[in-house]
Image (cartoon, rainbow, N blue to C red):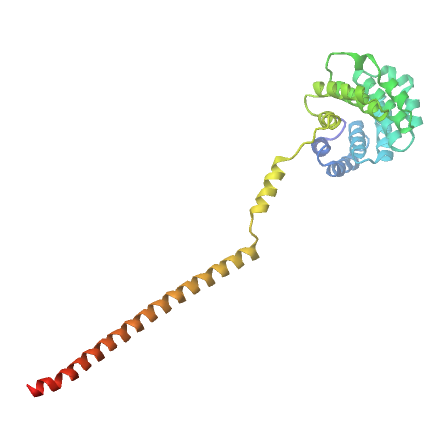
Length: 276
């Protein structure tokens, strides 16, 4: 609302494209975010969108700078967990853990607090503190039977940490619980569970294509087969012609021999007729 109408429309169009593309085509989303940033760098929503676009492309330093700028403009704490995760991306897990214990966390809503817990557990794993990561994830939200938007990701992170710590039986149990809560397939928990159970999935479409390729005849092979068939057909035609010709000659020879025999008979009868 702080921008002139025409400029506001241009900026909003670019922000819409960032939102549409950030999951499927993060590079294009990043390009749109840079246009919006060039047009309205003093708008908090633009800085936040630019931060998420940079974050999606693993440009963590740039993302952190944009998130900090947006936070200064709004005074809010909603971006605190993703800012901490940028610190992890920059190879500073200790800084992420420091942020996880900051007073700002207490001001977060439930979903953001769970996100902060996930970031803290990830930082512990970055520092090879697997047991500490497992303890970090153990919370009332994890133990709850109700399914919330964060439930699948929280259970998945817990199962993955257990597996990394060599606790395979418990990991399998929590991957199964993740599958139950992951209605939209946001994780690959079903694949991880199948892997633990020794189940191997085969792509039926690939098998059909392979079978089709096995029965296919390539262009050179087809040409060779056609040529061989034509040669075989020519040979059959030659045999038929030869057969017809030979039979005709044989018939003519037989007719000539019959005529010679008749002439001999006439000559033999001639003296007898003279005598009579």
